[in-house]
Image (cartoon, rainbow, N blue to C red; front, side, top):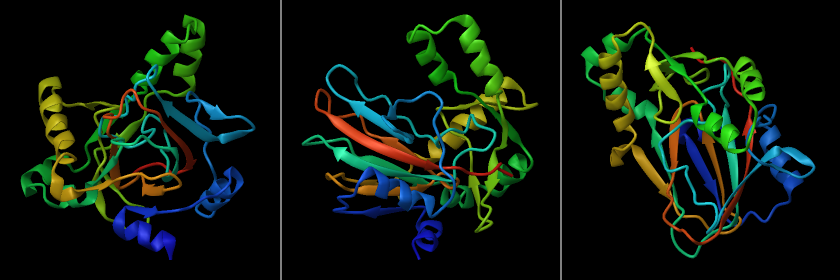
Length: 244
Protein backbone atom coordinates (compact mmCIF):
# COMPACT_ATOMS: atom_id res chain seq x y z
CA UNK A 1 0.00 0.00 0.00
CA UNK A 2 2.80 2.43 0.87
CA UNK A 3 4.72 1.78 -2.34
CA UNK A 4 1.53 2.13 -4.38
CA UNK A 5 0.93 5.52 -2.78
CA UNK A 6 4.52 6.51 -3.53
CA UNK A 7 4.07 5.70 -7.22
CA UNK A 8 0.89 7.77 -7.38
CA UNK A 9 1.97 10.83 -5.38
CA UNK A 10 5.79 10.76 -5.87
CA UNK A 11 6.29 11.72 -2.20
CA UNK A 12 4.46 10.69 0.95
CA UNK A 13 4.70 11.98 4.51
CA UNK A 14 4.35 10.56 8.02
CA UNK A 15 3.95 12.52 11.25
CA UNK A 16 4.86 11.56 14.82
CA UNK A 17 7.15 8.65 13.95
CA UNK A 18 9.33 8.36 17.04
CA UNK A 19 11.38 5.46 15.74
CA UNK A 20 14.87 4.13 16.31
CA UNK A 21 17.65 4.10 13.75
CA UNK A 22 17.13 0.35 13.31
CA UNK A 23 13.43 0.88 12.62
CA UNK A 24 14.27 3.62 10.12
CA UNK A 25 16.58 1.22 8.29
CA UNK A 26 14.14 -1.67 8.42
CA UNK A 27 11.35 0.45 6.96
CA UNK A 28 13.54 1.49 4.02
CA UNK A 29 14.68 -2.09 3.43
CA UNK A 30 11.09 -3.02 2.57
CA UNK A 31 11.65 -1.25 -0.74
CA UNK A 32 15.12 -2.45 -1.72
CA UNK A 33 18.79 -2.60 -0.82
CA UNK A 34 20.27 0.41 0.93
CA UNK A 35 22.93 2.74 -0.41
CA UNK A 36 26.03 4.00 1.36
CA UNK A 37 26.88 7.55 0.32
CA UNK A 38 30.59 7.76 -0.59
CA UNK A 39 31.13 11.37 0.48
CA UNK A 40 28.56 12.59 2.99
CA UNK A 41 28.82 12.12 6.78
CA UNK A 42 27.51 8.81 8.12
CA UNK A 43 25.98 7.98 11.47
CA UNK A 44 28.37 6.10 13.73
CA UNK A 45 27.87 2.33 13.42
CA UNK A 46 25.21 2.87 10.74
CA UNK A 47 26.96 3.50 7.39
CA UNK A 48 23.64 3.47 5.49
CA UNK A 49 22.41 6.48 7.48
CA UNK A 50 23.38 9.85 6.03
CA UNK A 51 23.59 12.65 8.60
CA UNK A 52 22.80 16.19 7.48
CA UNK A 53 23.30 18.85 10.14
CA UNK A 54 23.22 22.61 9.67
CA UNK A 55 23.74 25.32 12.27
CA UNK A 56 25.34 28.74 12.65
CA UNK A 57 28.73 27.34 11.58
CA UNK A 58 27.47 25.19 8.71
CA UNK A 59 24.79 26.89 6.68
CA UNK A 60 22.43 24.74 4.58
CA UNK A 61 23.30 24.56 0.89
CA UNK A 62 20.70 22.11 -0.46
CA UNK A 63 18.54 24.97 -1.74
CA UNK A 64 18.73 23.85 -5.36
CA UNK A 65 16.18 21.75 -7.21
CA UNK A 66 17.67 18.30 -7.73
CA UNK A 67 17.28 14.55 -7.85
CA UNK A 68 19.70 12.73 -5.58
CA UNK A 69 22.98 11.21 -6.79
CA UNK A 70 22.28 11.36 -10.52
CA UNK A 71 26.08 11.30 -10.84
CA UNK A 72 25.84 7.55 -10.17
CA UNK A 73 25.38 5.09 -13.02
CA UNK A 74 22.39 3.77 -11.07
CA UNK A 75 20.86 6.67 -9.11
CA UNK A 76 18.73 5.94 -6.08
CA UNK A 77 15.15 4.69 -6.16
CA UNK A 78 14.18 6.99 -3.34
CA UNK A 79 15.01 8.28 0.10
CA UNK A 80 13.43 8.13 3.54
CA UNK A 81 14.29 11.33 5.43
CA UNK A 82 13.61 11.66 9.17
CA UNK A 83 13.61 14.97 11.02
CA UNK A 84 15.65 14.76 14.21
CA UNK A 85 15.77 18.42 15.19
CA UNK A 86 14.06 21.20 13.28
CA UNK A 87 14.31 24.97 13.60
CA UNK A 88 11.49 27.03 15.10
CA UNK A 89 10.86 28.47 11.65
CA UNK A 90 11.85 27.65 8.08
CA UNK A 91 13.65 24.59 6.81
CA UNK A 92 10.72 23.30 4.74
CA UNK A 93 11.33 20.90 1.87
CA UNK A 94 9.62 21.41 -1.49
CA UNK A 95 8.94 18.62 -3.97
CA UNK A 96 8.15 18.89 -7.69
CA UNK A 97 6.38 16.28 -9.83
CA UNK A 98 8.60 15.99 -12.89
CA UNK A 99 6.16 13.61 -14.57
CA UNK A 100 3.49 16.29 -14.57
CA UNK A 101 6.11 18.77 -15.76
CA UNK A 102 6.94 16.52 -18.71
CA UNK A 103 3.30 16.01 -19.65
CA UNK A 104 2.83 19.77 -20.00
CA UNK A 105 5.81 20.27 -22.31
CA UNK A 106 4.96 21.42 -25.84
CA UNK A 107 4.85 18.54 -28.32
CA UNK A 108 7.72 19.99 -30.33
CA UNK A 109 9.93 20.01 -27.21
CA UNK A 110 9.01 16.40 -26.41
CA UNK A 111 9.94 15.39 -29.95
CA UNK A 112 13.24 17.23 -29.77
CA UNK A 113 14.16 15.55 -26.49
CA UNK A 114 13.22 12.05 -27.60
CA UNK A 115 16.41 9.99 -27.32
CA UNK A 116 18.50 12.86 -25.92
CA UNK A 117 20.97 12.02 -23.16
CA UNK A 118 22.71 14.30 -20.68
CA UNK A 119 26.02 14.06 -18.85
CA UNK A 120 25.94 14.20 -15.05
CA UNK A 121 28.78 14.93 -12.64
CA UNK A 122 29.41 15.17 -8.88
CA UNK A 123 31.17 18.53 -9.20
CA UNK A 124 29.58 19.91 -6.02
CA UNK A 125 30.96 17.02 -3.96
CA UNK A 126 34.35 17.33 -5.66
CA UNK A 127 34.60 20.85 -4.27
CA UNK A 128 33.97 19.39 -0.84
CA UNK A 129 36.78 16.89 -1.30
CA UNK A 130 39.16 19.72 -2.14
CA UNK A 131 37.98 21.69 0.89
CA UNK A 132 38.50 18.61 3.07
CA UNK A 133 42.16 18.53 2.00
CA UNK A 134 42.05 15.46 -0.23
CA UNK A 135 45.09 15.08 -2.48
CA UNK A 136 44.94 15.19 -6.27
CA UNK A 137 45.58 11.45 -6.31
CA UNK A 138 42.68 10.78 -3.93
CA UNK A 139 40.33 12.94 -5.96
CA UNK A 140 41.41 11.24 -9.18
CA UNK A 141 40.66 7.86 -7.59
CA UNK A 142 37.13 9.08 -6.83
CA UNK A 143 36.77 10.36 -10.40
CA UNK A 144 37.64 6.90 -11.71
CA UNK A 145 35.20 5.24 -9.31
CA UNK A 146 32.36 7.53 -10.39
CA UNK A 147 32.84 8.35 -14.08
CA UNK A 148 30.36 10.85 -15.44
CA UNK A 149 27.24 8.87 -16.41
CA UNK A 150 24.92 9.47 -19.32
CA UNK A 151 21.23 9.51 -18.45
CA UNK A 152 18.20 10.14 -20.66
CA UNK A 153 16.93 13.70 -20.49
CA UNK A 154 13.45 12.20 -20.34
CA UNK A 155 13.31 9.15 -18.10
CA UNK A 156 10.73 6.35 -18.21
CA UNK A 157 9.66 5.15 -14.77
CA UNK A 158 10.38 1.40 -14.45
CA UNK A 159 7.09 0.69 -12.65
CA UNK A 160 4.52 3.22 -13.89
CA UNK A 161 6.09 3.75 -17.35
CA UNK A 162 5.36 7.45 -16.94
CA UNK A 163 7.89 9.76 -18.55
CA UNK A 164 9.45 12.56 -16.55
CA UNK A 165 12.11 15.25 -16.87
CA UNK A 166 15.37 13.80 -15.56
CA UNK A 167 17.86 16.65 -15.55
CA UNK A 168 18.64 18.85 -12.56
CA UNK A 169 20.61 21.97 -11.84
CA UNK A 170 22.82 20.35 -9.19
CA UNK A 171 24.36 17.52 -11.22
CA UNK A 172 23.51 17.77 -14.93
CA UNK A 173 26.31 19.25 -17.05
CA UNK A 174 25.16 19.30 -20.67
CA UNK A 175 23.17 17.45 -23.32
CA UNK A 176 25.44 15.14 -25.28
CA UNK A 177 26.08 15.99 -28.96
CA UNK A 178 24.14 19.25 -28.76
CA UNK A 179 25.51 22.69 -29.54
CA UNK A 180 26.68 24.08 -26.15
CA UNK A 181 24.48 27.17 -26.35
CA UNK A 182 21.45 25.15 -27.39
CA UNK A 183 22.12 22.64 -24.62
CA UNK A 184 22.39 25.37 -22.00
CA UNK A 185 19.21 27.04 -23.19
CA UNK A 186 17.22 23.80 -23.16
CA UNK A 187 18.55 22.71 -19.78
CA UNK A 188 17.69 26.05 -18.19
CA UNK A 189 14.18 25.73 -19.59
CA UNK A 190 13.81 22.21 -18.20
CA UNK A 191 15.30 23.20 -14.83
CA UNK A 192 12.73 25.98 -14.55
CA UNK A 193 9.85 23.48 -14.74
CA UNK A 194 10.51 22.39 -11.15
CA UNK A 195 9.87 25.95 -9.97
CA UNK A 196 6.27 26.03 -11.23
CA UNK A 197 3.96 25.97 -8.16
CA UNK A 198 1.32 23.80 -9.84
CA UNK A 199 3.80 20.90 -9.85
CA UNK A 200 4.85 21.36 -6.24
CA UNK A 201 4.02 20.51 -2.68
CA UNK A 202 5.74 21.92 0.40
CA UNK A 203 6.31 20.01 3.62
CA UNK A 204 6.55 21.85 6.94
CA UNK A 205 8.70 19.73 9.19
CA UNK A 206 8.07 18.77 12.79
CA UNK A 207 10.29 16.56 14.98
CA UNK A 208 9.80 12.87 14.11
CA UNK A 209 8.26 13.63 10.73
CA UNK A 210 9.29 11.47 7.77
CA UNK A 211 9.29 12.13 4.03
CA UNK A 212 9.63 9.27 1.55
CA UNK A 213 10.12 10.36 -2.05
CA UNK A 214 10.52 8.68 -5.42
CA UNK A 215 13.85 9.98 -6.69
CA UNK A 216 13.05 8.71 -10.19
CA UNK A 217 10.05 10.97 -10.70
CA UNK A 218 10.36 14.05 -8.51
CA UNK A 219 12.88 16.65 -7.48
CA UNK A 220 13.26 18.35 -4.12
CA UNK A 221 14.55 21.60 -2.68
CA UNK A 222 15.49 22.17 0.97
CA UNK A 223 14.76 25.77 1.89
CA UNK A 224 17.79 27.32 3.58
CA UNK A 225 15.93 30.04 5.46
CA UNK A 226 16.57 29.15 9.10
CA UNK A 227 20.18 30.21 9.74
CA UNK A 228 21.63 30.38 12.40
CA UNK A 229 19.22 27.82 13.86
CA UNK A 230 19.86 24.07 13.94
CA UNK A 231 18.35 21.58 11.50
CA UNK A 232 19.29 17.89 11.84
CA UNK A 233 17.99 15.12 9.63
CA UNK A 234 18.92 11.52 8.92
CA UNK A 235 18.42 10.01 5.48
CA UNK A 236 18.34 6.41 4.33
CA UNK A 237 18.57 5.92 0.58
CA UNK A 238 17.32 2.97 -1.47
CA UNK A 239 19.41 1.64 -4.35
CA UNK A 240 17.89 2.23 -7.78
CA UNK A 241 18.50 0.99 -11.30
CA UNK A 242 19.92 2.45 -14.48
CA UNK A 243 17.60 5.05 -16.04
CA UNK A 244 16.16 4.49 -19.49
